[in-house]
Image (cartoon, rainbow, N blue to C red):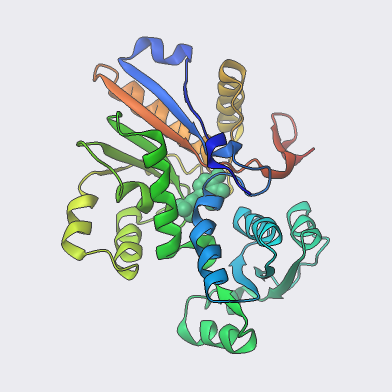
Amino acid sequence: MFDSKKSVVQEVRISFLNKTNKKLFIKRDDLIDEFVSGNKWRKLKYNIEHALQLGKKGILTFGGAYSNHLLASAAACKEYGLNSIGIVRGEELTLDSNEMLKKCSELGMHLVFVSRNEYSNRTENNFIQYYKAEFPEFYLVPEGGANYYGIIGCQEIMREAGFDFDRVFIAQGTTTTSCGILTSLKNGMRLSVIPVLKGYDSLGEMKKLLNYSGFEQDWVNDLLTLVDVHSESHFGGYGKYNSTLLELMESFYKETSIPLDPVYTGKLIHALYEYCLTTSEIEEKILIIHTGGISGGRQISLSEGYVFN
Ligand SMILES: *Cc1c(COP(=O)(O)O)cnc(C)c1O
């Protein structure tokens, strides 16, 4: 199935670091699978196991028009012999609107397009109840796999990487992956989170998700003191980028042969560079988590922007 042994830890050697006292390592979750890339498999693993345990026919989940989560859900369900339904934001969209939706459909996902207004109610109880009643044989996974099972799947990232690091860098969408990492830290390690949305309340959202998932409140409050939020690398908001970011990604790729995506991991590297520059004298061993985002042959091109090849 999907083998996390492919996610190796590598030392990253870049000239940029020569001026600093930092040592850099990267956990390559992007290598897990072509479509179920990076943290998306971590978040789905126990959700899928639970759906199978419940004897459900499939998984119903939610996402935007370019959702890595929908694509991963479609591919993972296919692999496990489950059906999949994707509730997609945007009633004007069709199966042919973009390569991501086309691929989801090819992988057997049934796509339901809903208005932005209806979609924005997706976590509200009546909306959830509606889909549960409409598709009783499907197990509902929240957008981005943001639930208890998503978090415990992400705890495995650090268990595989080991705990011989001072700091971990991770990009944030729903915060599920960062919550999994935070709840598995040891030995005084700190966590650097990079929200890719503008004006995002990282600590508030993490606290909400951890409490909702049943983690003890006092422990959650203690854990959150280990988090540093890098809120200045969003480049204008979700999915936004400019030539500075693309150039940074390209130069990182040239030196390391590690591809990045402009939505998450590119912004992570931007925040990492800024951090290393301002704290260059502090000796630290840093682990960055490559959460993927380059599935299905998506590539970045400096002249054309974000393209499929
Ligand atoms: C979805 C995604 C994230 C965000 O993960 P969350 O668990 O939602 O915070 C980060 N990086 C990549 C590449 C992603 O596709």
